[in-house]
Image 1: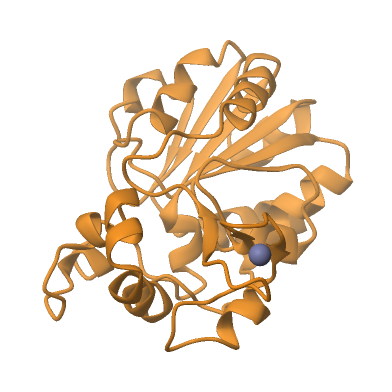
Image 2: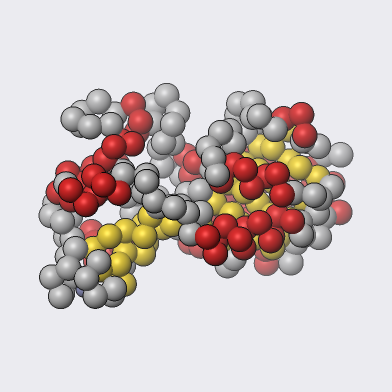
Length: 238
Ligand code: ZN
């Protein structure tokens, strides 16, 4: 079966996406060769600078890197985002589970988006708990963003050394368990524990859309090695 046929016969599709979904919106991939992990300009590695302890000890350096490399306020959804929103609107797709933090699925119209690593769009005051938008953060670019109460703001993004949100994980597992089709895109499925979610899938069709091989290729009903925006855009517009 091709992807169109699989989507046509499926009733409960779950999409699981990684950085490759956002690279087509010109947001660099964390781990690819030209991604931000190759960044040499900073004194510390990105893994170090994106850790909880680094944020606590060196908020100035954290925010310099964060605003420089983690925020892409001009990024727009690509055809993959719009195709998934359309499948949800048609009642075929029950959830988008994403490792991305850019909010582009919601910008494209998706409603049920489970963000395993949080979102740059939500920022909380560490003192009073008040929520702040990305715009409020950007207005303080070049400094450590603070709340009107004086407290330091922290993005609701899962940093290294921090646990994933357990309720989001449980909801993701529920949707995967109840899906008849799981489409995995833009991830090599290498990062634990998010990648382990695929083990919960018991449905009929596992579709992998990724430019390189993954550790789950032999379990897949269909493997597609083309850009995900092109693949999903064409199928949904048929
Ligand atoms: Zn506050």
